[in-house]
Length: 598
Image 1: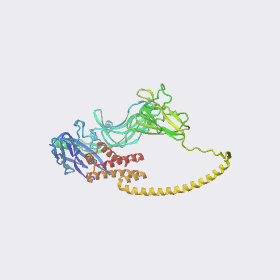
Image 2: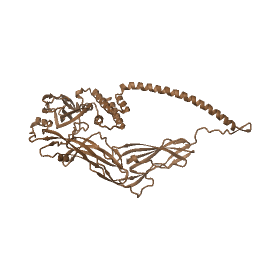
Image 3: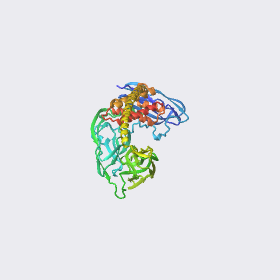
Image 4: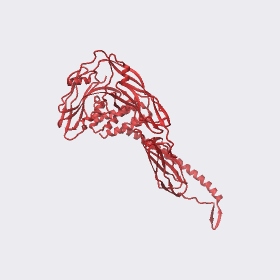
């Protein structure tokens, strides 16, 4: 059994008189909570509260649950203000929270300075920010479970548009709407045949939002959000996504409704105690999205440029050379940069009209594209390697890119400026013709001597080459031995200096499960050591408060929480990828770098 804890926490310990502070009273791992008494808050103006907070956290594989009440306060005076302990009867025993001291200055401090209407309580990265959704899990006499599920639990797919041009990106978002508590998992993903697919969100980042439907708030979980680039015209139907769910209910009996308590104490009791006593049970159900058809229109033939290669969106283009002069026979590089938004990943390299005497033999491309926004936006760079056979001044004509703009329904063409390059004769020494060399005014035929000398030179060169290779191999072996010794020494040093060394080794060896366990434990230990938290105080709420006091931003705390959550979820999934592991490792490195600055 997890241990009971009753703690009081403040979002800041130092603030200005005009700022706001969030104060929470948290009870962890309790079965029954009653007779909750909050301390005197007369030194503060209560802006909001009491509000209920419920949730759970997982630390090193151990799950704990908590309930709490939250106040948003504004100080009435400056100085050191003390919030005394709260009391409550928890599982039959009287418990006290800790006291809190807050220093209030005349100038703005580290409290929240937003006006109350912006709800400064909300912090989407931690479980305290439960969406304002009334769960409808109580099944009263006469109610039908299937009808309750149909009204309060469903999945659907939303499309940014159902009518588009070939190559025009559209966004498909799969959402789960819930006013019931459940364990849910995707059992079948849609195939999305006929599209290039680019996911916009990490599926393990379960960020909850709230949407109102028929006057009721629903918790909305984004299961998948992806950009689809159609590859062929015609009507394409998206396959259903299938989700397996265990939904949890409480079956109430007649007369189980509690009479409402009166006063502040009664309000606090009602925040903690369930309104209905009954028998818990679960219902299994499989949901899927309805098929959705997308009409993909072919690109018009009218006005289509002869050099059009499938680019759809809005783009610009520019070109540059890595050198202004080059010798004959030596390679130079032409870089063509395409910027814009649309189906950028599938655009082919623009055609370059090379001047006579120049020849291109290789084209490479690299891209820097933001796939989290729609349409896809970024830069794609094409590098053309080329050579010139003779010396001259060459003009590379403008490189053109034609694209179709869906917003104007027209083809457009952009082009680079022409670029000049000077090709000089090679500086390599020319070979002398030794077939006939004049001596003493006469001409001698050296051909037969040249053949004999060439043979001797060839034999001598071969011997010299072999000797050099033997020496080179010996030096190479010595260098390999030196590097191996240096690597072993570096590993010994990194064992102390690099807390993520074990995680790196696990990733290299392909030990996926232990990799995520190692990352999770290493981060928890580092944060615990940095904040000097007792093991009983080590939870995400205390970590968030401690890091904020030390100057961490909400974005940095969200990143920390995201890494911990993903490591925990990866322990329960059979699918792993090296890309995900490297991304998690990079995020962990950023977290340790930030911890080193605290």
